[in-house]
Amino acid sequence: MPQLVSLLVDKTVYCFFFPLTLTDTCMAPDRLQYAELEERFSTMKTFPVGTMVSYICRPGYMKIPGKSLARTCGEDLQWSPREQFCTERKCNHPGDLEHGFINVTDLTFGSKATFSCEGGFRLRGIAEISCVIKDKGVGWSRDLPFCERIPCEPPPSITNGRYTEAAVYVYQTSVTYSCNDVPKGADPFSLIGPATIFCTYNAQSNGVWSEPPPQCRVVKCDNPKVENGRKKTGFGPSYSYKDSVIFECDPGYFMIGTEVITCEENNTWVPPKPTCEKTTADACGAPNIAHGVVIPAKSVYEGGESVQIKCDTSCTFPDGAEEMTVTCQGQNIWSSLQNCACGPKSSGFTPHISYGRVIDGQKSSYSVGDIITIECYAGYTLHGATRIEYVGENQWNPGVPTCQLSAYITAIICVIVAIVVFLAAFWVYKKFFSQNGSYTVDESCKETCILKTNVPAEMEETAQMN
Image 1 (cartoon, rainbow, N blue to C red):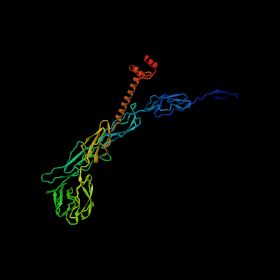
Image 2: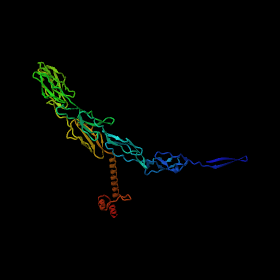
Image 3: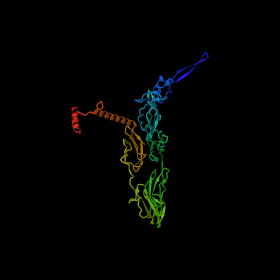
Image 4: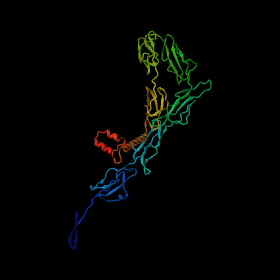
């Protein structure tokens, strides 16, 4: 709009009107996380309406196809367009981690990948890497770590004994102990404790042995004798570790205690030797039941007293019952007394591992305590424990693991499928559409196609002329 200007000359005021136009300008362009102004625009101070500025994508970002890298100062004094025109670059998938797991939520610039190992292995290297700027593009900040079997210290040595040696002692390595031989005529050493121990790990993923090593000691128990009783088995001049003796009472006597005793590591018989008491008209000794328990448990029962007998797990009486009640009839006689019969414990079968297999410990059937080792086929990752134990009823502890397709292989399959679909669509397009988009009909079938179409005769003639 015109502006009034006053000028004083020789005490006379002269007034002038000058047409003055104020140009509207935009604020400086916003600083963007993903792009920066080209250098020639970075020093500009004013941005009149219509000014166009150009950006370049920052390192770690690349131009979005079809998007302009320029923005213009509009009459509303706003920069447009506003949408993002650079996107994060992507790192390649880190790959597979043998005996471990990779957690990658995204592959874009700035994302992270974390690593962990399956049971029995520990991580060597950094547990987390990032997608960072590298070599004018993006790449992972560090090399992949690896999972190594957890090592154990060499197994403990024992006095008067030895163990099987190995080149290295790592997770699942087992050693077996044995006692040294002794000169002829000397008392032999007995191996007390587990003969075999194996390398495992604790909560801190440090290697430890499954249990303490055994001991080699001389164990001797005295010759057991029971008054008014005699040995059924276990005759011998001397008794060493784990030797057993079975007793029975003389006629007219009943047994109080257990008929079987065993020589244990402290040179004593366990349980203590039984006693044989004289049978009375009105009493019974405790019923001796194989594979079962007596409720209530006492040494002597009065005539007419009843007890409940309960079979052990997987055991039953001949009629299939798991419990029964018997009554003392005097003279150490019980009514309907029977033993529990035990069948084999339920044997399991090899679990089915899709895309995996059992590499150690496989059998046609399994007993409680059997252990198997599992691995996945190439291209698949194990989710769960490598080593599982049979616990009965066809159950494994921990649960049976699964083998899942690795993320890298999945990505390759997706790319292949996408290419096949694209090629098929392109073939269909080339087959049935001309370059200008009109539908074409194969000459060999044109006449047939027209005959099969209910159209007026004049349209048929036109089609044939064409």
